[in-house]
Length: 500
Image (cartoon, rainbow, N blue to C red; front, side):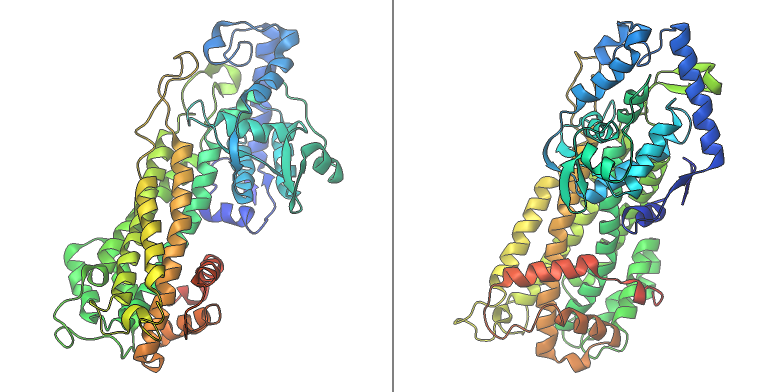
């Protein structure tokens, strides 16, 4: 894959992050990087007063730095700013950060040497991924703390994930014949002044959220069959009458999933109307797909954005301080993503309740083989309700909060990285809620007769049954939930995508 700094997409990044595709710089990006570096070297030589190159940082921006101390300034920056705490980001996020930081620097506005980008890509190709604590970023002045831990790896310090272990960066780099670099003027600042932690977390979260969207529809279709749901609710005319493309698309996919089913009913056969959790599947999931579309658009802009400060224009004739490091656009997008995914879980949990509650269906109470003696799926619904409730807490917007920093010089921040982390947490909870719906829906259709299922849902059911056996008696269902969750997360749904 060729990095230009201009056209990286979520789908292309997936190939690098998860499929380990190799990356190189375009010729144009190479020239832009070399030209912007010449500008920085001239500033240092001329002793011009330019923020972050010949001055301190933040509140120290009025402190001039002598030429002989310029390198030490950059090293001190990443040392002092590496204040991240808590559990590390997943390796996939660390890998995404390497890619996104390289892509941003490739735009040629940052003034780094080519060696900096080359080393980022070398770590990526060798699968040496910096250990980056998740907590500690305010999301303005960029993701300073997380990116400082990334920058430490470039100089051979800090810890990295390598071949399934956590080791010192210098050890892994030596084994892969990668030489640590010595940071020069502006390079430390260029590495850490950016939104790559929140954006990387956002990309990884979005890819999972998108998969949740597809699989939630397959599972919902199986629930519709288990509850003899009314097929008329997916009639195209209803959804065209409202006009949302995403809603229309969900309804179309639901019709495809349920085509040929003898378990669905028609309006008035069993009941006049279904409950909202069945009847409004296209309206609710369609709205979540609207969210996903918005989030993807913002991520793809940010993935190709120059987000450090200052930026170098016109081959150094203009070096301008600004605020592109402020994470507000991604903070809003991640808070929006939280809502879109949380509602997928919320409506799923309501369908679980309808599957297990004997007052709401004609199935055995709690889908139990021996009701009373055995509790069946009773506590699985408790678990789903707990996860959905936790999601509601996590869905509180991080982006509306701000705390001043750097002696009030940096007096408004985005908290975008918190929003991205919470979005990812909601996604993990939602996977488990969907797993519980999948397990209970399978049990429900078995009582109805799997031979009456639609060909598509039956195919999905058969694969799921390889993971979670039929419930013939009470057992430790936690194991089933986790097994189904893992299966859903790794399920290759592309095989039936062409049908939709």
